Length: 578
Ligand code: ARG
View (spheres, rainbow, N blue to C red):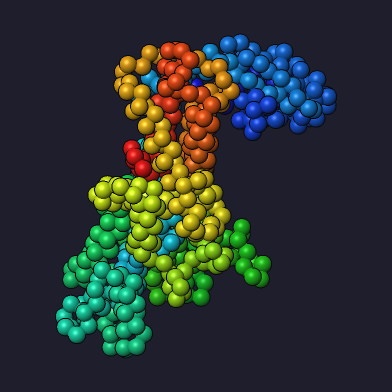
């Protein structure tokens, strides 16, 4: 049986606490210990519970320890300070579980009861290039998707592409113009320029604008020509985005596109239903839902427009329909949105309406996994020197160039083809890891030197650490099948590494619950550092005995596999040599 040490200890301690007179809902607060002298796990909740019970906390701690049955699991249980409990795990118990992990393809990580989880991420807009917000959503969302899938959930990737709205009249009219007119040849490969030029024509040329407006009406009426032109715009954009996904090693495909247009036929019904339920009312010609929980500047309930005076629907209307669809049609048990923090209020309003209308029961969570901005070193939004938004393609090119230099400086004799391949993997890894390793809720500072540093919590460090472990295994000349299945833990560095190796599931479970890949990054980084410590203090190839040699080799093997699996869940590739 795979083991989740945290879950196991939490259950055991809770049991002892209740037996000691604590209430059933008490929180033992079991944590991985920050310092070795506090054991492998510590219990922090005793003081608060003792206070509730009105007894001295050390007395409660003592009672809990007496009632606690950790026979065969812990080698020592200490009480420290006012009533902390420190647990030191049994070495044979650790060894047994490590062996299980080594012989399991899932490294000892259990699968869970599967739920259907819809993950809304990436969501770029048609005829526009992905901006930083989309890039963060893509990278973080994909790590979350990989993690949830690994645990055994049914994950539905929903790429909520901005493919509908009044701007399409203008875009179609402009696409038509550049296809027929020979003078204005704008490369459609530069979507940003295309959009800007279309907008310029729309703003300056009244005839063009009139034409564009007539196309909006036609498109919404299902006109064949307009629909074909619209499709073209969507296809060109998504073909370009797909290249980016592939380059970034992101698992999204064209089959995951569920753009705003998917919900257009639901919108009249939603508005009618919200009116019938008395939630939506007419206000100055528009249809509005007033929400008590959001106040406007005058302190009155905020009005959320769901249909404009001219009949047009809004971004919010679509998000109401889309949430409903995800529950009713996709049968979601949980819905996650990787969307930039500036859209928080928008989502909260849409979901408040969804709940009031009874479209989704409270038991199905709607979660906004928001993220902050990427800032330049000056602390201002990350821009090019002339103040434009940084293009992803340029950013990846620069990363590649820097990675080439980094690798060439380390390996002057490496042949060009290998160097190129390595530089690809390292540069993509560096850009992604820089994003993934930071707590997503805060802004983060984009810093080339940092992300390509071979020291510290960076992709190159992790990739390099992996090659080091692999090289030890290679030098042993022993194939995996020959490993004997013996683990003996004697030295402190071995024990530390062993405990960490058994904590993969805890890290993965946290990422799955909170959508915070940085927790997995931190875990893997700690593991790499512990391995490096272990490697320094515990000779492997020159071990004292055959048993010790075999045991250490297996710790190295499990470290290599854990690093590879963990980084794979983050969407970061490994190399065998660096
Ligand atoms: N396309 C939107 C944007 O660029 C993001 C969509 C996020 N998802 C959603 N369900 N609203 O801002």
